[in-house]
Length: 61
Ligand SMILES: [Zn+2]
Image (tube, rainbow, N blue to C red; front, top):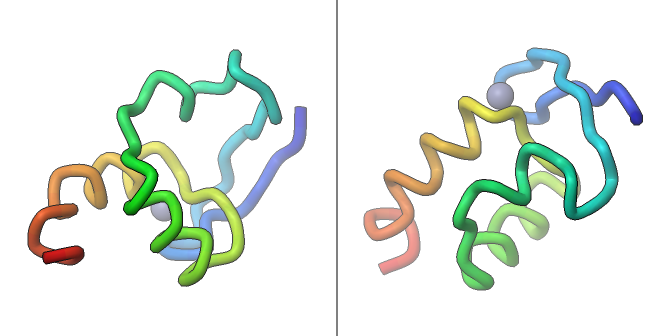
């Protein structure tokens, strides 16, 4: 497990680097995950990822 710092809000969070990671439970579309990796180069915290999932249609349309 690795402690990462969210690139968006600066909050620290734990990354499990596997399918057991909390982020695997979030439904992140391929398009959104490509957008996030291009924008932030790393994972974001739970809250920011959830906010992006909710806003996805506005961002990617
Ligand atoms: Zn965050």
